[in-house]
Each structure stands twice: as C-alpha cells, then as structure tokens.
Amino acid sequence: MIFHSILTNWYSAHKRDLPWRTSKNPYNIWLSEIILQQTQIKQGQPYYEAFLAHYPSVHDLAAASETAILNLWQGLGYYSRARNLHFTAKHIVENLNAEFPKDYKSLLDLKGVGDYTASAIASICYEESVAVVDGNVYRVLARFFGIDTPINSTEGIKQFKVLAQSLLPPSNLGDYNQAIMEFGAQQCKPQSPNCDVCPLISSCKAHNTGSIKELPVKLKKIKVLKKYFNYLVMDSENEKTVLEQRTKKGIWQQLYQFPLIETPTAVTEKEFLSHPEFSNKINTPYNELTLFNSSDIIHKLSHRELHVKFWILKTKNAPKNAIRWSDITSYPVPVVIERFINNFRI
Image (cartoon, rainbow, N blue to C red; front, side, top):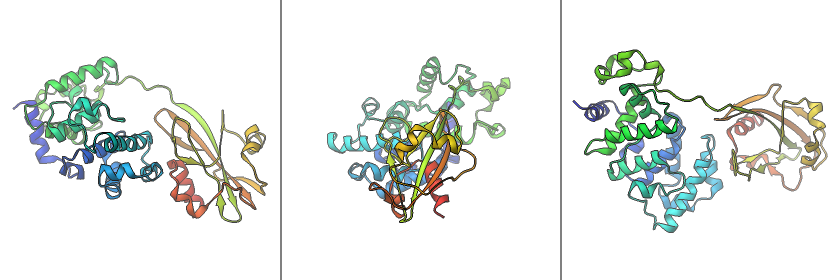
C-alpha cells in the first residue's frame, strides 16, 4: 500500500472530531487556520467557536470593530493575526464581492495568508493539488525519509515542500493533507511517538536507524531578548484607573495597557521614583506607591522574555482620561495584564 493510502486509511479510523472538519466553507477553514497558527488545538478550538458565534460570516467579521475583534482574541497571542483577519475580511467583502479566492495563488494575495494557509484552504475547499507543510508534516517526512536538512533553513523549506508535493494523491487532496497533519499530531508525536502501532514503521528510516529523537533537525533559535516592563496602575478613590493604547508597530499593537515605563534592568522603588519618565507619566497627585508583585512576573514570548512589575498608585482623584474599573474588561489587553486585573480586583 502506498504512502498516501496508508495515511488516509489511518485518518479515517483515528481523526479527532473537530468542528471545522465538518465544513468546506472557505470562511470556516480560513478562520480555523488563522487561529491555529502558533496555537494548539485545545487552546484554539474555543476561540474558533466563539468567533463563529459572534461572526458567522465574513460579512459579520468585516462589519465588526477592531477593538471588538481584539477583545475576543484576547489571550490567544500573536495579535497581528487578529488585525490581519479583520483587514482581510473587509478586503474580501469590499473588493471581492464577499467571495474567497478559489485557487492557491490568489489566496496568497490575502493579508496574513502564507503558503501553509493557502494550501490548506485550496486543498480542503477546492481540492487543488497543493501540499500542506506544517510542523507535523515536517516531522513525519523527516523521520520517514530520514532527512536531516534543517526544516527552518531556506534549503529545508524548499526541499520538504517539493517532497510533500510529490507525495500528493490524485484525488481527495483535502483529506490527505489533513491526514498527514493529524498523523504527526497524534501518531508521530514530537516526544514518545507511537511507533509500536505505526502503519509506516516498516519503511520508516528514522525508526530503522534509531534516529527518531534526532529528527527533524532545526537550526538554533535566535537569542531571546530580556525586557523590563514597569506598569503604573492608578487606583483612585472614585474607582477609576488609566489605560493607554499601544499604537506603534510591535508586540501588542492596538492593545491597551497601564502607563508603561521600560527600564534596561530591574529597578528598586527608589530607582523607579527617580526615573525621568516617572514624573511625566503622573499627571495627578498621589498618596502612595506600592509594588503589587514582590518578584518580577516572567512573561515569555517567541523572541522576548518580559520581566514585569505592577506599581500601584493610590490617588484621591483620577485625571480626565481615566476609565472606570468596572469598564476595564471592554478594553483588549495583553494576557499578562488580564491576569493582573483578575488578581488585583478580586
């Protein structure tokens, strides 16, 4: 039995019951694929269901405000995905007569849609003969064929795409692409793969050479940059605080946060009070300043490690731009701030 038949047969018997697998609607598939980028299924599925409930069509998503979309996305991370999702929905409605492109090359023109997402939509919705290559597919192919080219190198990306394309079946493209991804997620797992019951074991080079743990090969990640964030949390006697929006490009663009002072290293209260930005951030008299967390909260992102302090500023009156604490959940905020709010206001 050939490679694609083994995988599709395995998929028929072992695939998980996931909501987007009952649809070939490009809106549903696009939405699921964007949400699941850099996200595990167990985390992404509730967001997928929430987005469909709030925005059942591309028309509904396009008509929503960016703030509403970011609020619904809150906690999922990589917020540029949400902004691109909204931009693309509006583009499809306004410029494409609310119709998704129907081929791989045209799908690539959509903002936020790369090779993987375009391949998934094209094959699942339109049965186009294009291979999906994600982390699971890299792992299955690297192990089965014994390929040690780094999967995150220019050479590796090209090599694995060509190989994946050559393995496509003549029909049922969508099922096959989902099958090989599911096989990597459920059977050929990163740690402790189920080799004893693997239908590919007899021809798997990694198993036969004892190199399962070494494959796939990945180039070392870039150095993680440490940053030190000091948030000023105003807490007035009339139950108000201050938020500001991150408008510059970078992490958490368009999300809200407490006034921020970034320092090159961790600071003491004395050092913080003498920081030149401190007086600039405070535009109202305050009674006391206390540190909410005695040790830094470590918040890890893909290429950054944030060391976060929340400084509580007790005041009698709030400035004109203050908001009520009772309204704070209507503002989309990074998850590290959301957790603080939940702990602070209990």
